[in-house]
Image 1: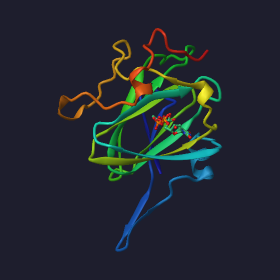
Image 2: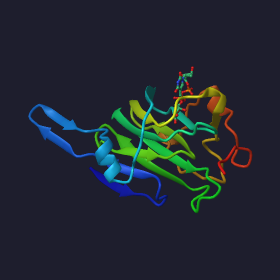
Image 3: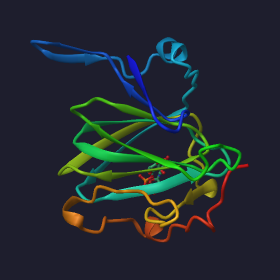
Image 4: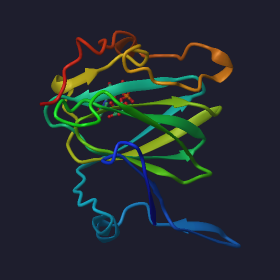
Length: 182
Ligand SMILES: Cc1cn([C@H]2C[C@H](O)[C@@H](COP(=O)(O)OP(=O)(O)O[C@H]3O[C@@H](C)C(=O)[C@@H](O)[C@H]3O)O2)c(=O)[nH]c1=O
């Protein structure tokens, strides 16, 4: 298992060791000891799975209390996955990172608590799986606008078309109005 650092040191791209053979492949997607040896000492309490079609954008989501750390990956298709640092005390406050995660590259992204998270579906459809360090708490759920100009995420929009959003995500808060972390 290999960690690829990003310019936001707390956000990590993780490349599992993939053992291919005549049957297909095998990989460990979560091993508490291996992750601890990489500096990720994590306890997960919820696993999620969503499926989305091309052009769907989910995000940018976070919980203002019960902030969730998320270990995310794709098991079919490909997405552009994004984390935005909402921690006011952080040297990378307001910065974002984006990474392509796909069934083919097997990459995972570690999105720590204190970040808004979202993804855009690049393939015909994508299955998105993630482990969370805190339970879902809709009363604390918040949404930062996907296209806030002061965050300036460079989404690789397919054919330049506007992404498809849920009503909740279309009403996401702009950067200035979004709740932040201390
Ligand atoms: C996130 C979540 C949703 N739900 C329900 C609420 C709602 O009826 C339905 C769909 O919810 P949403 O529209 O919030 O689903 P979705 O837009 O997929 O939300 C997810 O987006 C990505 C980007 C994340 O980072 C996740 O943490 C989560 O916020 O599922 C749960 O029961 N448990 C959960 O943990």
